[in-house]
Length: 120
Length: 140
Image 1 (cartoon, rainbow over the protein chains, first blue to last red):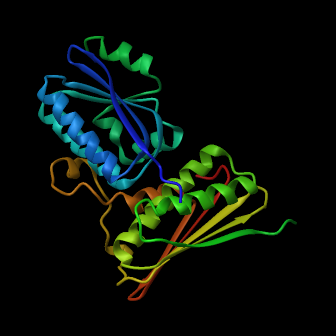
Image 2: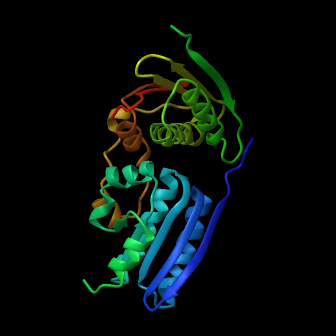
Image 3: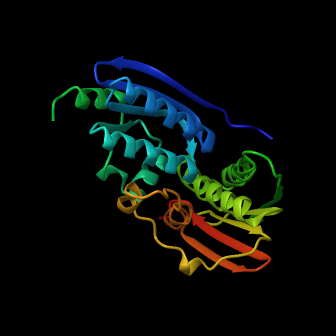
């Protein structure tokens, strides 16, 4: 049976912004790694977390529940949670959940960086 | 009219077993002309059905994927477990707002299945839960 791997890398730290690239399958294990990374970045003072999902192939509801934990942590820190480059199916999943009410979702990393670097 | 494509599998009790079902969906879906984007949505729904069956079924999970080469093509996926069963009507609709202020953040699986597939039919009784889902290419 083919096992889907998971990759997570902090790709950019710039002031309050941290860009985290997430690839593969976001399930329980991947979600827990995402929560741990987000917690560390928030503790280090990065209150804008941008998750780049360009290489994310699939997500399940357990992974989603852990992303909601990240959202809760970011809201408590009065920060901003953003996602960019989701596949159409993941974008639809976020839309079903109503996630755009609480997190910013961008089609590309360039669009996200442009928006997040502009004071709102 | 070409014949329906049919794959039956038993999911092993091991991590990521649900991906065996998505591989079957991919194979059958492609053979009848499903697009990548529609297949991705079907696979998300099938992952959720399988995760529920593996988590609550407590044993063997059977998956059948049938592809009908109609115009437009249609996929039917049936996931069966032999757990204690549940009453689908009693499951609350998840609310992101409520979850953000509460402890429990799960419960999105069935909601996602219903939005990603054209039809979701659940028959559940002690000893057998059967989830049947269909999706046409370009549906939803």
